[in-house]
Amino acid sequence: MSVTVRIMDVHAREILDSRGNPTVEAEVTVIAGEDAFGGPCINGRNMEAAAGNHKERADGGCPAPVGAPYPLSGKIYTGRASVPSGASTGRFEAVELRDKEGRYQGKGVQKAVRNVNTVLREALLGRNALCQEEIDDILIKTDGTDNKEKMGANATLSVSMATARAAAEALHMPLYRYLGGISAKKMPVPMMNILNGGKHADNTVDFQEFMIMPVSAESFAEGLRICAEVYQKLKQLLVKDGLSTGVGDEGGFAPSLKNPEEVLDYIVKAVLAAGYKPGSDIKIALDVAASELYQEDSGMYYFPGETKALHGSRRDALSAADTKEASVLRSTDEMIALYEELCRKYPIVSIEDGLNEDDWDGWKKLTKRLGDKIQLVGDDLFVTNTGRLSAGIRLQTANAVLVKVNQIGTLSEAFAAIEMAHKNGYRAVISHRSGETEDTIIADIAVAVNAGQIKTGAPCRTDRVSKYNQLLRIEEELEGVSVYENPFPEKYGG
Ligand code: PGA
Ligand code: ZN
Image (cartoon, rainbow, N blue to C red; front, top):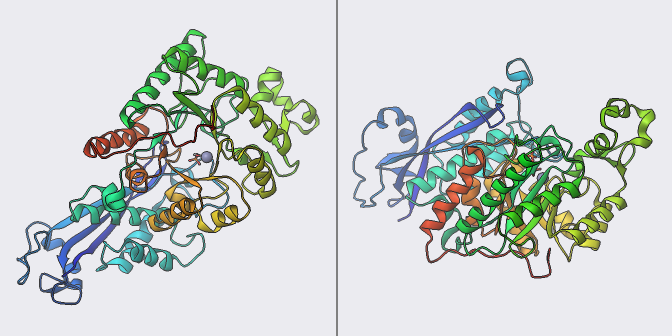
């Protein structure tokens, strides 16, 4: 006898994300049953009838299964999931389908919602939700393109995630355990964003994210507390100096500081003020999001904030081509030299997207120079795509992959990228997007795959904090079993 959890209904709607832009939320409704007597049979009826009878059956129970004692038989469960959205989106990401007309300044997702409610629903009715790979394969094939441009990766991902949730619900299992089985027990170290720049804020900070990692904590809960304490101290320091404490898209503060060193000095001060040791208690991680700084025509990286900080109100004039000499521009080599310098001065343990998403040669050089000292994370470079990741592994570029489920569009493909990374000695960092919802699935995924690191913003704004809170619940549930450890060998970021 084997248990089946058949999909009876799939329904999507348009909701809002944390930036007030529309996104897709899906619900997958399943009925638990068994195949004790062969075939796709639920409670003695065939699965099509079961799917068709969803509406009448939703209010009450189903008849007891024929001669079958499986206790979950006939019960109906719904899994719900919603899709995040990026701002510094990589060029090679799967397509986020937007309506591109009228409502919400073209950002509506009614087409993606329609795709879920018609084509994808049809393709999935009656399927066994426990077979996640099969479900995802159907989503991939129904779309039929390389980058999910037909259905939209936002459409496919909403269904993929909601299916996993429905299956876990039907088995009465926590999601992390359903996804990861008995080995799911490693709590991720937060890579916590406390200061925002780049596309996530309107300040003069050019690097997108400055993050802290509480590596000496004994548990996730302790690590989270340490980070929140540092965050509050940072706020006090900024207030004292008359700087803005407004926050960026991921909840980190967004003051106008003049260059990366100035930001890092504030962070080190905040760590010390909170009573912790930079380097041994707290390490620093950066997401440069360098593709956003890269200029195709000059082949250089342009730092608009640093330029403005240097030239003040003359900045508008500076954006004209004839003032180029006055702009802060860095070549690939100068970017690498800057990182080496920053790593010498500060306890930096990880740099994400240090170079442009297409600059494989630059990445190779960067990896050669810094790859055995710090973690080099490919976000826009790999876009959670096993094709790009395997190229990166072959070329020995980076040594970690950022995993954003919506970059690829199904859970199975994201899990394949994580597996490929782990098999090849690369780390995987599970990540949110700058546009998020209340969905906490990345917390469960991080534990399920024992990733050891999670990037999910500041301890500020519920779209970010909800993931941390879910991890607190998971750690509590795994009491006595969970593991929390510094993901880096001693030599990293000392
Ligand atoms: P995004 O930023 O979600 O705006 O792409 C997050 C990141 O670059 O890591
Ligand atoms: Zn990034």
